View 1 (cartoon, helix red, strand yellow):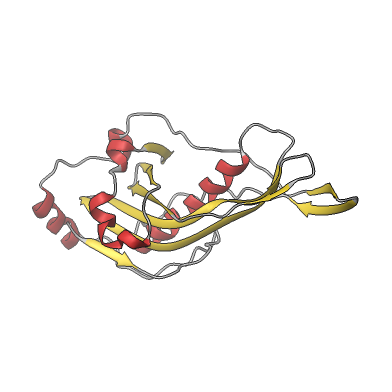
View 2 (cartoon, rainbow, N blue to C red; view 1 turned 90 degrees about the vertical axis):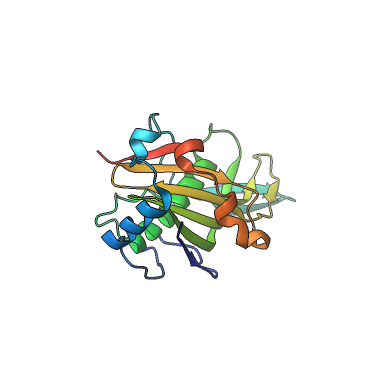
Length: 215
């Protein structure tokens, strides 16, 4: 099994223009090597994850919110969602990495904002990718591991109390091919067990959820 490691802080990734470290496209030579090392039957994401697409989804725009604190009125701007990225076009490895980073940001923001509407508000959502790796577990499927920070960090409970939250890094693994995308979280991952990313990363096809299907 081959592993490509791209280390270092990547930073917050804009959805439309996600930055990435250039990596080669998946070549026929790589596919041949993978077939020899794995010897598994060919499978696709959508065929293997035999469920419908499940993911948080809504559209929330930023808006001003007035909070009364200690007799003063303060104005905060709420966080907003970003759309899921469009289907990759060439499915080169660097494009898939950029796609996954953008998809995960959209997932994190929607997951924080698309719950039942209540009196509380979310003002800030932190998202940054610390490390990323790709695994060649299947001939035509690219598995992508992200070690990222992604969660709401500031908000209000609706009673005048503004809360702040520290966010620890967590992992997530994606499987991407021309049929769709599967995702599985790996919350216990952190930089201390960098050498164990590949061995401990679950298989999104076996343990994950279908989060996008390309018709």
